[in-house]
Length: 260
Image 1 (cartoon, rainbow, N blue to C red):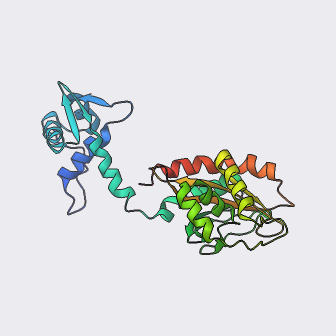
Image 2 (image 1 turned 60 degrees about the horizontal axis):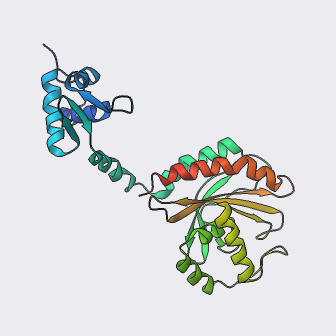
Image 3 (image 1 turned 180 degrees about the vertical axis):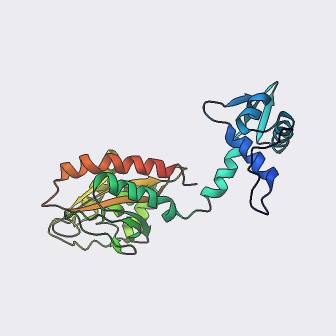
């Protein structure tokens, strides 16, 4: 006699088999098998046809599956299951995987920065043992006008929000290379918007060069930025851009897909 599921006989006490069976059916659909017959679902899940049919019809009733003749396929309602998870996970937890990946692929330390009024603060980081970059500290705050992470966020804001914020910024140059006027800062922000990243060369501290890319949410609004720092005498700007920028941009794009 066949079983209605391929679930192991030694499943933990308290496990609800019917829930497991329903989820197994949902996960059976894939890019290679977006539409399946009852027989195909039965084969992929290890359920008998009668059991698979009951669960499929239940999922149809709940709106997670639609039936078209002999074929079944998932509906967009399935995305609500992922939405519940994504909306409950803090930004820092989502970002840490990408921070570690950037660090491992480039050798540079990297941090996640978010705006805190007129500052940008690091919420998460992945440091490197390489000697060509300083370490990044979680919780450290930097002036939004001089940090690459801050400039990136400023540049990608909605125009009205950015202009309102610029009225409150009092520029206090931090090195001989720092911009000293709002007009000069605005020119830098225009460059950042056009090129899609921020490169700040020794404006916040002599000898330190930083690079940042924007992280947008699913609605295309600026949410945060990834940024890295190097010693300017050890890593030329062209090398920093060629080695780190593509990796950082790819990670930011992937992270965006998780931000509801």
